[in-house]
Image 1: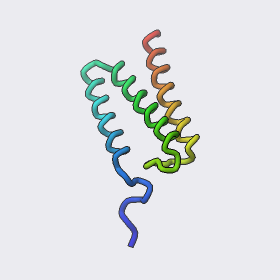
Image 2 (image 1 turned 90 degrees about the vertical axis):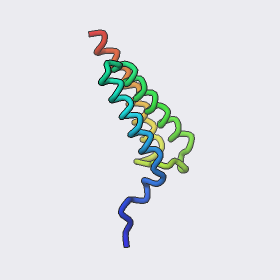
Image 3 (image 1 turned 60 degrees about the horizontal axis):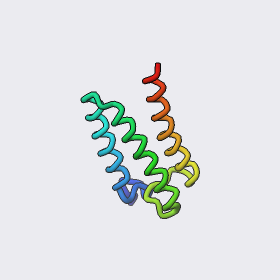
Amino acid sequence: MPKSQPHHIQPIWPSLTTVVILIVCSVLAWFGFVDIATYLIAAYALVMGIARVILRDKSPWKVRSVIFDSIISFGLAIGLVVTYISIILI
């Protein structure tokens, strides 16, 4: 009998920390602290990318290869900050 959840989601702490960070950032943005929310999401993406590089095959979450996951995380972090700063400068 198949499990209701796929094997690659265990353990659940990376998903829960992501949800908590996004909820906190949403509340911060709602109260007008968009810059702090943006930098917090970028910092979290950077930390998760570094964790993926350090943990490699022992990482609790895997989408593709280590290099792919890391590049996506680093790209999100850099892209968010650059986009936010460029919007401020307009």
